[in-house]
Length: 114
Length: 114
Image (cartoon, rainbow over all chains, first blue to last red; front, side):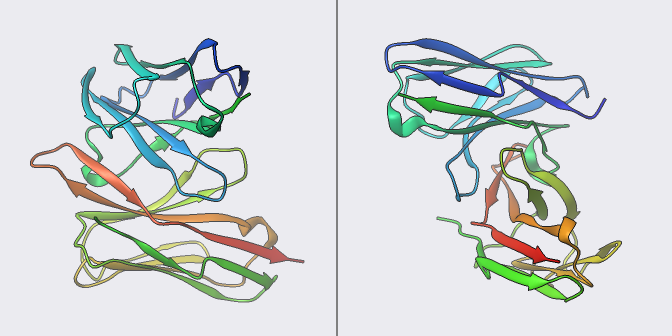
């Protein structure tokens, strides 16, 4: 299994809603990532979990809250988002840290905030 | 701030033509990756180059890493319509240990017309 699975594929939410994005991998990878990608832009790193511990937070607003329940799962909890948060949210994993950069990406969740 | 400059930003060619995409930086990277992304999907890793001067071939795609590990190129021979997509280069740097981060270029949007 060489897949990173993200759910849901599409999500529409209001600014007062609470929702969660989910990501799962069964490749035994110990590092997992959340990226945000706006249209026609490259992915931007949000969070990195290494061995289930948060190791990098790229100054992401607190309305985004990551969680790593175990080595195979990564969640992103969303609360009180703004319309400018609408984007493609990508989960990725790698065997270890990104030093050799072999990231496997999921298909993403296309988020629209109304 | 580390930057990866990709050029050209857009490229539209006829099927059968050759093309080269460039990725340049003033920073040294421990490795450099090329990804291809289709609309609404996550990036898919094409290749990782690690050694300065390294050349890797993947069918019609040839990847080169500069001697100083600051730049890379992707050459496609006899392009096909299936090569259409967004090509992203990404450089990996270490943060004082094994944990690293990927810096993405802005991408080259390639359109191959029949």
